[in-house]
Length: 333
Ligand SMILES: NC(=O)c1ccc[n+]([C@@H]2O[C@H](COP(=O)([O-])OP(=O)(O)OC[C@H]3O[C@@H](n4cnc5c(N)ncnc54)[C@H](OP(=O)(O)O)[C@@H]3O)[C@@H](O)[C@H]2O)c1
Image (cartoon, rainbow, N blue to C red):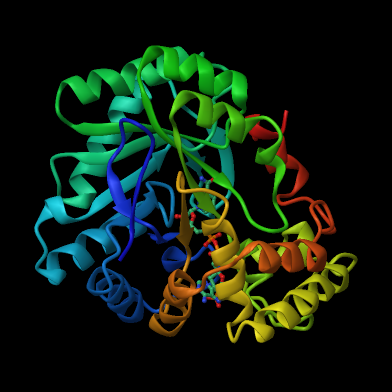
C-alpha cells in the first residue's frame, strides 16, 4: 500500500482511507457482520486510516469500529482513527445544528474515547463550523486535548479558506476533510491553494459522490427510508438523468483503460496531488476490493484530459446537499 503524508504535521497514512459512515445507516440499513468484515479486509489490504463521526448512528459507528479493531487483533498504533464531532441529532435521526463550544468539545471527546475503547484519537475535528463559536475557541479546546494526550492531531471539515487560516494560526492543522470528486470541485479555486500554502493535507470524501458516479447507480434504484440519497438533490428526479449521462461518458473512458467507473473516479482524485487521501465509503468487501483497484490505475495526461472532457468541471446537476445543509457549509460561502 502506498502511503501519503497528511499535511506537514499530520500522520503518514495509506493512500486510500476507509470512511465508515455508510455502516451506520446513512445509506439505509447496513449489515453489521459484513461491515466488520469490510474493516478487517481493509486493514489486511494495508489501509491505515479509518474515518468516523460520533453522530454516525449516534455512537453506533464508533462502537462498530471499536469491535472491528478489537477483533482484528491489531495494535492500536497500526490504525489512525479520525473522528468528527459537533453535529447534533434527535432520536429520529434529524439534524439539530452543531455545537463546537470548548466544553462541548471536551464532552464529545470523552464519550468518543469511551465508545472507541481507546485513550487517544489520531485526528479530531469539528464536522462543521459552529457559527456561534469562533474557530479559535474550538481549535483551542482541541489543542488542550492534544496537550493532555487525548488527541494526536487536529483536523477540520468543510470550512473555507479564511477559517482554515484562523484555525491553523492557533494550532497546526493536519488535514481538511472536504467533498472532492469529478463532480464536486468547489475546493479547487481557493481552498486547495490555501491548504497547500499552509502545509495541510486533504482527506477527500464523496469521491464517488455517494455512489452516484460509481457506475453502479441506476436512475430507478429503490432507496430505503433514511438513505441520504433519497433526499440528495443530485439523485433527485430533475437531476439524475443529467448526472448519469456524465457517468456513461466516464464509463467509456474507464472501459478503454480496462478499469471500472468507480476505480477511474477514485484514481482521478488520487491523481490530483500527493497531499490528497480519498476516503472510500465501502461498506461491503466487494465494493472495497473494487475501490482498492484504483491504486493500481495510473492515469497519464491524456487519460486525465479524456476524463475532463467526459465530466467537465461544474457539469453536475444539483447541489451536493439540500439547502438547509448547504447553509452549514462554511466551505461554500
Ligand atoms: N466531513 C464530512 O462532512 C463528510 C461527509 C460525508 C462523508 N464523510 C466521510 O467520508 C466517507 C466517504 O464518504 P461517502 O460514503 O459519502 O462517499 P463515497 O465513497 O462517494 O460513497 C460511498 C457509497 O458509494 C457506493 N459505492 C459503489 N461502488 C463503490 C465502491 N467500489 N467503493 C465504495 N463505495 C461504492 C456505496 O453505496 P452502496 O453500499 O449503497 O452500494 C457506498 O456506500 C464517509 O464514510 C465518511 O467517513 C465525511
